[in-house]
Image (cartoon, rainbow, N blue to C red):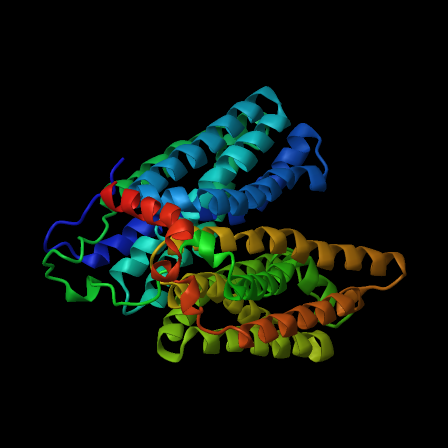
Length: 449
């Protein structure tokens, strides 16, 4: 499948909606918790078991993005979006079969493994294309698309809940809900497949002068792994995501525990509303903070994410249990930094490594997300369980976790400070013919594809 080249006069503003159609769809992953209670009741699962499809999906997201990033760069966004459509929708269809037959392993395999591949390929599918279309505002462009991943749950959660209420929460009702999801997302993602275009070659005349990519570094994905900048950004992303996902994964019980011993305890309804607010902050941060990075620079915006994040966690630890508005405000800011970090990292990579194979580099960097997806919930849940066994309750369950998160953010801040421009010896033109020939051949193949 050849990358579709935009005709003369094609508006670059048609590309973000194409990317958004993919990210709004795969963003359903954040709404998996809607299916947990029905699956537990219908199939007799524990809470740990019902989380397996989501956990495997996040792991496969990172792995498929890492291993498939070069293919995405070589074959273009339409191929990547098609693969994402097929895998993500097939994952739901396999899950529907698993629910209908009572085979939970098929749900884990379908939603987690097959659908997780769709998550990873779909997540990185529009990144390099958007950066090439918007070299003047890469943070805003990637923020628009990645905002969809954060906001997908705002659509999927009530939609899924309504279907389960209408179809029933037994195995047949769950299967029907999975089936509708798979077919509906296939249609919606198809819009992105049909709409996406890549910029015309620079040698050809274009009416949109903004789409001409400026000269800059050209570093291959293989060479990027040999630079300290890549691994410093890996640490930056991992620590920022760990700090955010630690709150996001346990948001409802956390706010309930913090104010359980006060005169104004938090009800289950209010806790659910708090989770919705966090999702909105996550989504808003992806477009707001990433657009701000175009104005103040990528290193400066990560100073805000990591430095102010330490302050927010400190406020929650010290006075969070005495002021509900302060607790909510700090949590919202942390989640906006969480979302902003995801949306800003592709532009940061573009600044350091250039647009050549930036999608593949981004895919490899997303292994930091897989790590953080396990690390963040593990820190918060394991420590809370140990503190509860020790007879503690309320806000005391989270004190140690908050201190650890602050320490991780300090490590991330230090890593960000160490980031410097990539040495010219790593640029594609500086690589010796013996070492650079494979990269050059791959580049020629991608240009001719």
